[in-house]
Amino acid sequence: MTITIDELSDTVGAEVRGLRVEELLADKTLPQTIFDALEEHGVLVFRDLHLDPETQVAFCRELGEVDYSPGHHPVAGIYRVSLDTSKNSSASYLRATFDWHIDGCTPEDDAYPQKATMLTAKAVAISGGETEFASTYAAFDQLGAGERERLASLRVVHSLEASQRLVTAEPTPEQLAVWRRRPSKEHPLIWTHKSGRRSLVLGASTDHVVGMDAGDSRALLDDLLHRSTEPERVYRHEWSVGDTVIWDNRGVIHRAAPYPADSPREMLRTTVLGDEPIA
Ligand code: OGA
Ligand code: MN
Image (cartoon, rainbow, N blue to C red):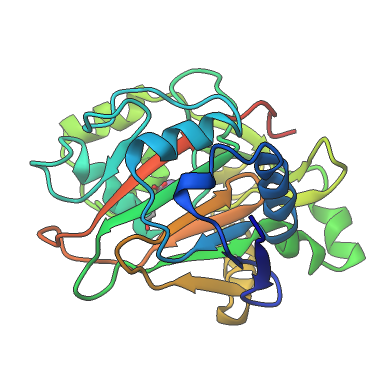
């Protein structure tokens, strides 16, 4: 199999051509090729691949341990991303995907953030529903030396409540109680990866900077997020049925462009679990 990898923007995303579903599992060098490309580009796009759910899970299994939590789908390892509550009974939470986020910053337990996430489009929205990505490595790289120094020691509290409030501004006491049952987590603002590369840990789950005045804290986090996701730093994927996209959840931030709750949009997601803490 001869594959080509072409960049889709200056800082994030590349399109991979030449893959065929029938050969995906046979090529034993492919997982390493994909890892290397993910590390370099953050997001890989496979247009028109028409990956079936079983092969998707089997291929992700070659990339690492797969999340087999119940996913409202008959194939184990597939999680159905849909706002339709008849397809996913937890769909209302997924509106939080409309804000920039890193998956897994506020886990139930002490799980590390996911290594990678794969989405395949089963049905697309009539309008909206594109997925946008920005590199959090590039977000760090753009900082000046003085700013790096000022931010180096900062720690940030992340919570489910912070991300849910952005889409449900006036929760009922019951909703609030459910959100607050999820423990909040403290992470450094700058993540020094095992590879030595550094990235910013930003997004909807950021509640406040530890020890900083609430207003200053919000202003700082919003400014960093804004600068990290300027349109020229973003790859926006416009989905067609059969497209597959995989991203390095530790080095990119992502969001879905809003789409209506009754939209047919349905993505099949497989999550490759993480093995590295945010440190
Ligand atoms: C996710 C997610 C975005 C989308 O599955 O973690 O954020 O476009 N999805 O559906
Ligand atoms: Mn997500």
